[in-house]
Length: 392
Image (cartoon, rainbow, N blue to C red):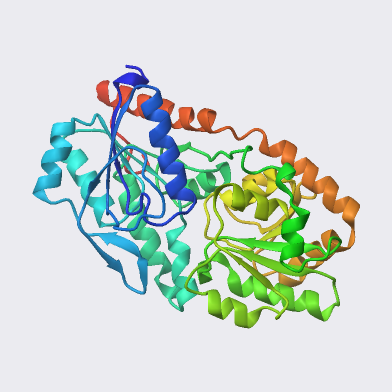
């Protein structure tokens, strides 16, 4: 079997109704598979106002607004009509991208129809309860995820650091890597635009600290704000530039200095210009499995100060392309950022090192690694080799 023989059924709770790193990766994967001659059908909730056009045919599944986060849709299963479509499509591998009701049902159907099923891991869902005062639920969430992932033939992590964590958590005994790529035509140091900076009120020599992403608490907004407080107390010359939108926007604005700039949601070349026009990225999030914004900032020639967590640990070379700080070390975060703000030479050297490192992440190479994983799982199934569900 080769890639042109693949018939992939892709299940995800969000394919294009909210734009984020995972949705863009899934759409790029679909495009790559189709260019290689494979057949792909996506099963996902649909939205009357999607964030961007979908790649490939999407079959809608019933869903309800996610409680407290209505921009997301929570799929509630696979009704008989959709099951008939899935059967007619004749998938020879199921790919589940989210451990929700849709994902659980898809894995059950794969077992019933004796088809191989793999899962890709995009978010550290077990860390979410701590941002909503429910940290005591983390062991329960982790156990639920373990049960889900062990029912799959293999799982794929976006970074080696995340893969190692999944092994330590005993989520699966077959963990592969499907990393992420970066479009260097969009994210490039050449997109730095001094006129755009000036239009925001930034002086040419004023260090701009970027926050890039959805404005939700699980992105570490509280840590970001506390570190900026420390920088302000030390008299460090800097300005915060927030690139993104989200439900916590008003809270974030109330916690940052009045001089903070909210550039709003950006996409495509406008996003590349906005990132490249800043001077460093601060990414305190510990919930991400890869950190697309980290890679994009590196491609733009920015040093990155990030929490030592899954994703960033595989991207940042400590002391060369940026700094990795233990979560909770707000004083250490502030010291690292202060150095980059006060030393232009150190900042530029780290940014250039990051730009060179980002060249390794080319999208077609990244997606072919997952295709090779598909083919391996199908081959093992054809040989009667089943996934290991518990340690021998």
